[in-house]
Each structure stands twice: as structure tokens, then as C-alpha cells.
Image (cartoon, rainbow, N blue to C red; front, side, top):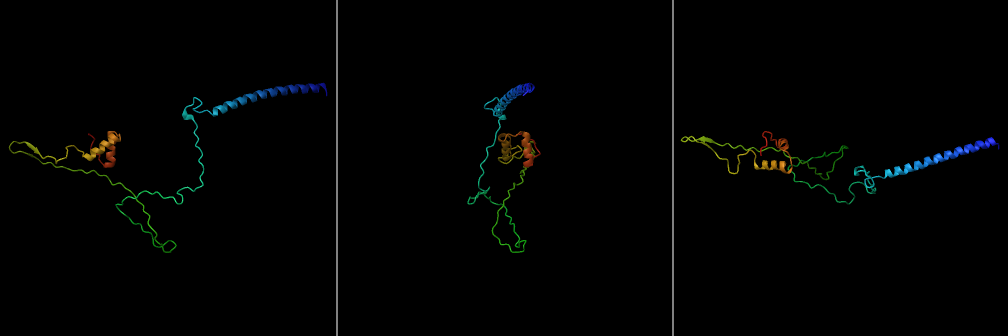
Length: 192
């Protein structure tokens, strides 16, 4: 081997040693960065100053069941209790199938539909006779029947209004809107 070649090899060896040292330093800094990032990844409200709203919640996986979804064979069915019907409508099937063979009746399925009646206020008008005395000219008016007060609303209406404004915490405007939309009472302002 020539001296020139030996000098080149020694110089290249020195360069490679420097490169290895630089790569080793870079590797150490990257390892430190990885440790720092892994620590940050595990941060939550318990081990840092992060608020609980920043915690990551993961839903735990549910173990898959071997059973089919829905009611299982032998399980007692839970059905809504039927109410007493005000009207019964029978829906009759055709006695002949689409394939033109006879249909054998088996049973009936009960389907109930509940509807609220239209709520209409009951207005009772009291016509009080009025007159004047011939002698003293005093005006005389008939009295309302026992239990009837002079205000506009009856006891049921007052109870509903009190419940809406008191128990259900509605404002007077909201109570007026409820009375208007449900009870069709639009012609008075609430003064109770």
C-alpha cells in the first residue's frame, strides 16, 4: 500500500468517525424527543394541568354476544296494556289471496290509536235582569246564582292558569299563548 492511499484511508476514517459521532448525537436527541412526546401523549387531567374536558374518553369495547338480536326464544313478551276503546273498527281481509286460493282466518291483531279530543271552552252566559223602582227610582239588578263569582274565569280555568304560571313556571305571555293554542281562549288578557 502506498503512503498516499494510506493517508486517504486515515482521512476517510477520521471523517467517518466524525459522522458517526454526529449521528450518535442526533440519535440521542431524537430518543429524548420520543420520550418527551410519549410523556405528553399520556397527559390527562390527573397527571397534568389539563382540564378534565380535554381528557380522551374511549368507550370500552362490548363483548359480542352469541345470541341473535331481539327477544330470545321462550322469553315472555312485554306488551303495552290495552286501553278500553271508545270505538272499534273492524278491518276485514279479502277472502281470496292474490294467488286465487282461499284465505283461512286465524286471529286478529289489535292496533290502538289514541287521540285527544278538541278542547273547547264552556261559556255560560248569565243574563241578569235589571229594573228600576217606580217609587224611589232605585236601580235593581238580579243576583248571580249561589257559587258563581263576578270574575271572568271559572274555578277549573283558574286552576289550570295557576298551575301553568306557578308549578310549570310560565310567564303570563306564555300562559296566554298556551290558553290560545290549546284552549282557544284568545279574547282576554290575564288579570288574575
